[in-house]
Image 1 (spheres, helix red, strand yellow):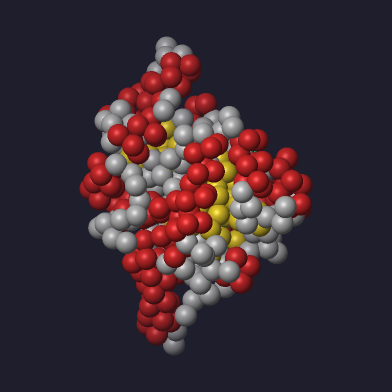
Image 2: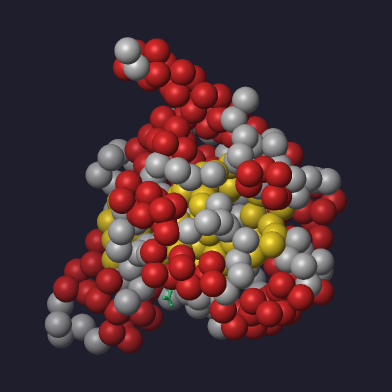
Length: 315
Ligand code: TUI
């Protein structure tokens, strides 16, 4: 059975985090993943701070297992969210798209386990010095907001630099990817894209269908020109966005206006003008199934592949 120090730290059965996907990761998905023995996460990007509070309360009704909240640090309501999670007694936080340093004192005083997402060794070291409990090191294979480095070189460099546990994210979709992450020194994995296909995931059916139809070359990164690179499925929307970005006659504010609200539209309405954020492994997602089946496939698949490789390759 696969377990690690992160399981003891968080009180979870399997070292599997569900990505805190904006607009997607609600109480339904988080509770299903936590009930399956992983760590479910609720996204702070929803219809405002009170909507997130409501998801936290719903999740408590749906599971007695540990779950957490992911705080997107570039959101306009981030300081309100930072206080609200303390009020609600949330025990575990992950953060994304920035440095959570300014909230650390408040969260640590409340006894919260804080696990920021980092995309470089420099930020990982800064976070360890600030007293975080672990880091998620996320490679640019991921969906949504991405850094520069990819998972294969990022994870071992972060693992070598830190003493605290490292959770690997970016491009992990099945037991093979999970095993690879453990080989690189990760104590756990975080998976986003694969959970888009979970039965308990409330994205619009067209979003799920687009994920199931994706191939290896179905994603594109846009937004680099103004410092907010985002990976999403290639659609008429993302291709138009990329064209606007590469045309010097188009003003940045027009590009931003074109993109505003596009993720919500995709998630809730399956709108053809939506932004379908997804990682490079979308092409490996084959079916809609319960979150429990996904968690178990990741863990049992990793176990099987580690045994198979050592039997096949170690003399
Ligand atoms: O945060 C994410 N992924 C996200 S957030 C998001 S919300 C959104 N985005 C665009 C439009 C609408 C909604 C979608 N996807 N992942 C965690 C992550 N954090 N990946 C990379 C980073 C990161 C990158 C640079 C963290 C810190 C960093 O540097 C911070 C600094 O200040 O040095």
